[in-house]
Length: 522
Image 1 (cartoon, helix red, strand yellow):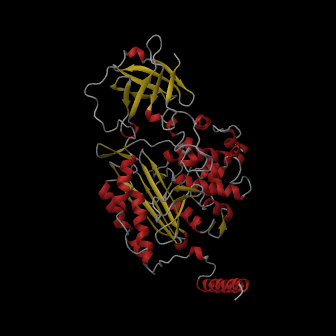
Image 2: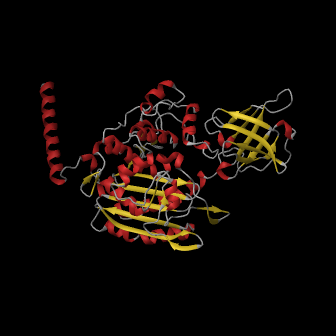
Image 3: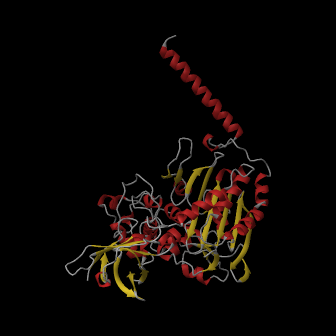
């Protein structure tokens, strides 16, 4: 048979098969794309059974960890089918947590804030692909071409080239939002749009640019775009509103094995990235809108196309570690991926070291979402609970002990990366120079000013407008140490002037991007 005729016959057969498949798909799953189909069905009653186990799962994790309290809400088929609080708002006070208790959301704020941007995009005020400098002209990165071309979407998908958590080390020094954003120009850049590195202040720059385009503040833009239309009366992007809330969860941390109430972290400087406070009842309304493609109680809140852009993968956040493993993907302010059953999931976790750990997870094909807020330091509790619940809801059984995965991972993240961490102090250290060799003023374009002073008979570094104090313990020679836990690190003096004084000092815990060196100024 002639080859051309054969190819035509094969092409005709393929066309017929595709028509048949399309017809069968339309007949069995009207308006459903083949890529949306999961081979693992959810039997009737399985999601309800999973919801029925939430009380036991929550109390079990609280007993296991001692975490003071949490609140949970579940949305299914556009209804809030579960909302409950557990534990107390503050240890020592018996007042219980309820579904209207206000928590800090930490990085779940990125997903909520991304819908604020999507709503603004839908009104034509900005585009996801607008260069940030179009609305924030003073914004600069180290490379001029990247500065001109980095877009709102680039920063919301963490693909600008900024290093991981760029600018975060300036927070404890007391610099303002504007000062931190202006200092991003000193950060070294990876190739533009070629890799993923999670940042709070990169994303914040994009959020502030959107608010500037809308001629308002970020907090007000969030209220009028999302919070008010969804009736989220206890939700705010202002730290002061969280502090004023009468029904507020107090953050707690573990100190020497005991849970202790602490003052909350003020996230106003990075509000688009971490500054939302809310309740599970309020967030359940946001989840309803998300699962309904921007519609809430029959009203269009967010443009569907703008919201779809947010929920489309833009970056590979976690490359596959083996050939048969799924990659981690990130949209615009939200994780987007595929679970073990082949269903698309959306979600984000949040964590403040000072006592906040949160999680939101959504499965659009099942019209299912869960929100978990806690008032204890991050240790994997919300993530464990969310994954266990989704196992039960989607598969009908727990596929693994999720705590055995998340618990050690969070514990490892709390350890200092310093090469000195965990090592015993030298038994025969090299002597330090006389104290006067280290005393004086130092300066860094990125970190600002610092002084080395005597405090209580020992040396200390006093840095930034907050006059943050880093007490120094001698290690060996010109090397000292400071801090505890993840903030433990070396402080190393270098150089020798004619008078014998050190010419520079590097603070390891401020040196994540290679910008932790102060040069002597006086």
